[in-house]
Length: 558
Image (cartoon, rainbow, N blue to C red; front, side, top):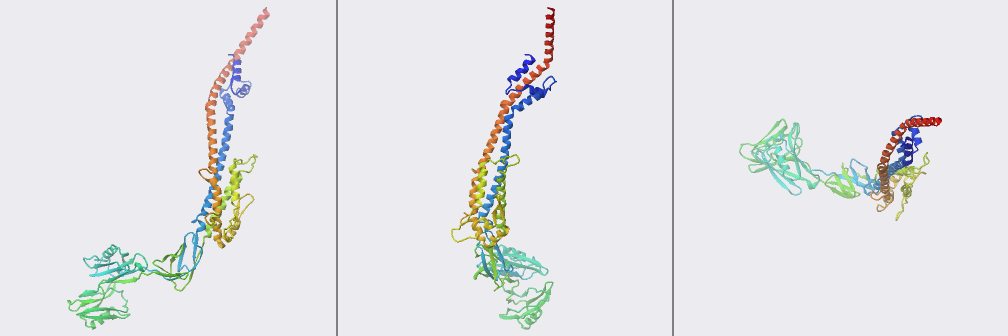
């Protein structure tokens, strides 16, 4: 085939038809022999890919639609979250603040939904916890005197423990361990200071029902010592009995008396015992011994005794005139939903307790709803704004957006009509919330706070209705047709966009594999042949010219 016929064949057989002149002009120039095959094929393939470019442009639009719709879906979901927050019985509208007019007597908290109102409280006495402490010993490990003690609870449980060498109460530490193992509702521990060590026994809970008592056995023997009192301290008014030789004598002390004076008084009674006042690092004490060293005596004081520090007692108060007793200073049940924490007692002093709506939390929740609503309606409105290109946003023609815009605008026009009685909050404007010209909301904080302060129940009824059927539920139900994750409009619309995008990707891939790849191979071969033909063209033209010259000479010779 001649070079000319090769080029003409390429021009007539390529589909779609190729403008060979344009390709040659672009690849070889007007005065350059030969063809740049790569550039020529690229130019032809670019023309063939025109449908792909249209499909890819559609995909760009679909991506823009997905981005915009996802943002609107998120913003709308935020609105439904806010509505659910305002529609729950444990949410901001149900939260309560409690104020005490005298925090030095009591403080209080209230659970969500507690009825708002005022109450009067008089704290007559606080609950106390029963506690006892032992006589002073030099250290936690000092051997205790031989004696016994009996611990009895208010409930009637009792235990007797022997003290002294070889017994369960050998030392203070041993005695504490033994008592703690009895399960009597008390806790024993050793308390040490600069004067020595004592055993402290405290009930596990306050109140009279948890109280307990300790009695120690009277001492019988030939030698007894009293507990130490700090140096310089004196005795109080008291009395004890001493039995010796079958005779019992009551011995009394007067306030301010010392052990030395008491010893002198006992010795003057000739009771068959000798009393001696002594001292040590812990203070002063009294020792009594049988005069002959063998005749025992009995004293109504134990060798190792206990003193009651506090009796377990119930708190006593009145709430709205009703007497209340509580084993604990944390009082529940006196006011439904309210927990009182008693701090101090002031019998006869009346304090006020006020339960009110938590206006701060409610205001925050309503402000959040307005903010999220404005975000959602703003994103929707933006799709219908005509830009500099003269077109709307990527979703401007989407009916889902038109319906959502209408739903949002209609929802905020909700009117609350009570089944009975009247209300000060029948619409959003009564809360200081009004609609701007562009459909967004404006909130007057002063008006909102006034409504929350003066009419908290009406605010709650507006949002929640009589049975969670107020504004919040009504608007949320309307938006569910868009936000339902299974078959809501957003889900279906996004699914449709995704499906269309996937189909276009398949179209592009199929077009590439079924047409462009083959076309590229064919064009490369044909343009290569044409390029070879063009390279041969000068030689063939020379041959033709030579032949034409020879023929001319032959004719002249004839």
